Image 1 (cartoon, rainbow, N blue to C red):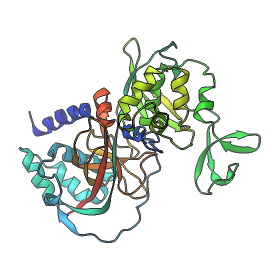
Image 2: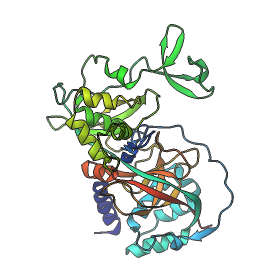
Image 3: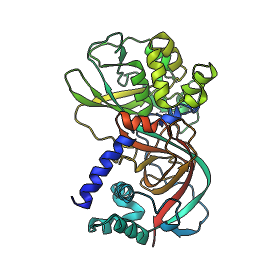
Image 4: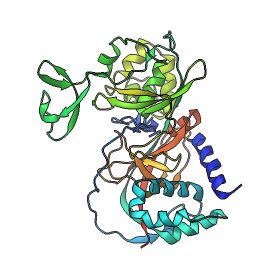
Length: 402
């Protein structure tokens, strides 16, 4: 098998080891993935987007920073043990965004490059890239694109309708809102007479009746899909399609992990995504719904029977294990980074994540310069892995050697 073939096999496998807008770990945060997660989005129950994440306007260049020492990739913590296939997929992801931007020369060289051994990839990368340390420490979480069963007929188990973007939801300038919001920013609103007021909360939306044909999910699955930003749905007859992020009500995300721990329903170390999801399933009905309503944020979806590849906010397919969601006020889409994350705080967490990644997404819980949400892939195994990621993070920016 060619090295390129091995890359495909390994990357496909990594989608299984797997969140994310955001971010399964995000559920434990006060604010989380806005649903990516671009359509994918951040369970940054995590702690997004998902792919933690919904589509966002392409960012302008981030604020200028003081010059930092430029070093070789070989000086990075964990570089010797890193998987070169993940690094290669990260570079390809960066090259797919606007012809590679600052990496254009490297991307052109990659088109004509072939590799016989993994070490050749590392040597090639070392010759073409340098790194700049971003001072400080922050947080790494993870997200994924979930896969869920769905039905065309509601039942006691499948009672949650998949809600599409409502006709009365509009985006208006903050100056038009009542009460007024910051001018120049757009807010989700609905019109009441001549006024534009904030859109309905989660509890208010769920109290509304769905009319016309609809698809139905388990309530806890739908809640997690909203955090991730998109998901694959499979009907009883085997039909499989994507529910992609379409819009949201503009209200802040509130992690329900805090609600569950403050009420003594779960211990703090038990707030991984899979544990929270199981609690919601075990208490399905008014009890679980009341807890979910503590998060006023609500995402709406579009049904796409043809689109099967999750995209990030940069409108680039997300390579599993090699893409992150970032805060676009500090980082530009398409840039490459080295993540060095350890000291996981959730039970069953992998000890460390050290790898090259491409910034291709964003999410509502992804705020700050040293904050990232690692995309793990899709499916249950990806979700379990993503739900255990809540690690101390250090970041390096990867720049062309020239």
